[in-house]
Image (cartoon, rainbow, N blue to C red):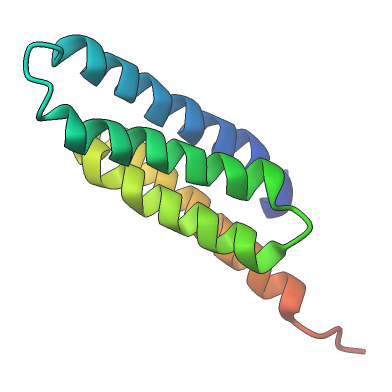
Length: 109
């Protein structure tokens, strides 16, 4: 599987992970809603940015890259304790950056 083809499934996994963690935090912290002001915007906001970058901004590659990297960073803030989600998010961001760099490289020949 090429790097560009790996971005969509990995992006879907990151979005699902951030959304799922947001739902879990919502369910666990309903008794302390003030804490949710951190958890929900970072997890669901990160999921939204990654979703938009991977699945919606394909015609604007630079915007897509910014959205993916920002979403991965934002969601990783709240999911750092899981260890797996930040690794997946950083991997997604690295693949998106590498794909964009390869796209911008002029053909040699």
